[in-house]
Image (cartoon, rainbow, N blue to C red; front, side, top):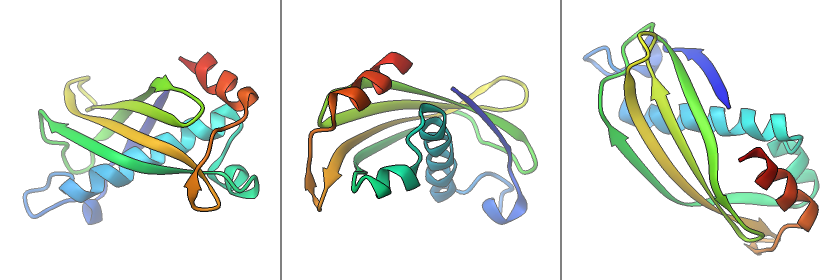
Length: 129
């Protein structure tokens, strides 16, 4: 799924680049939009007493994301089973240059403990691939 957004000054470091910590925020936005598209917003999951806790995030920096650039984040679910998921996310600048990649792993959690999601939710997540 594609998600577009503009980079503003408050998100940048003194060099005019997207601050390292803010990559995580941008990626979180894009994952949240994907969940909305799947019909399982963060709020809906919360109402189901189901959460996705991140267990690992790996960022690979290739090219700086500049102030006021409009970026595109491509988010895919690379692997998913009833307990875990792995997401791959990539950022491209307005010139379609590859800037950054994240590999994000998460576990489904209910009542604070790892929990297997229902087969229906798994099927909908899997169908997205």
